[in-house]
Picture (cartoon, rainbow, N blue to C red):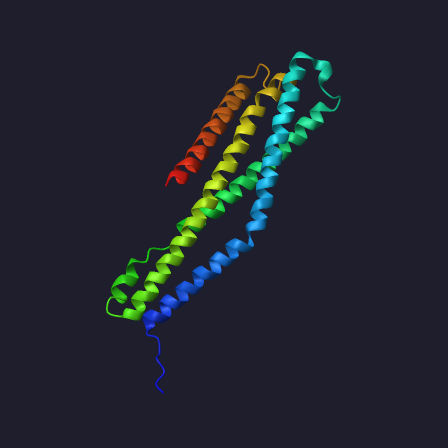
Length: 201
């Protein structure tokens, strides 16, 4: 009985198909970790929002502020920094994964005269498309999470300045503060636009 040996192009395609199966499995396995990260980011977002409300009320009623409000403000800033780093990590990871997905055009000519190879190529395209859609969706979520964190950052920024007079009469400090504030706002807008533009596509 004659055994059919896959051609070189068939072996390449089979290997690529297995690669995408493994990638999809790893993406599914990391689903819980991504969900925990998302919960942590939203927890930081709402915690910071609540602290902003307390500082806002405290700007009119100083007695409303707890005695350790400077320490609590520092803790809130630390949480925001951690959240932004988590958000950036998610964006960079998914962005690099999206960019690493190669084009399959070079397989078209190689598989042109091989029916089995063409079937495998079609399967590979389907696997790649499914994986690419999942990566795009995760990237969209990462941009949205980072946008939420940046909204929390620039919403919180005026309160420490008003409460603790961090800028004072220094022109340089005021300029740096303004640059950082508008840069944060611009980054948040960019991330939000990326999230919703990816959703439309």
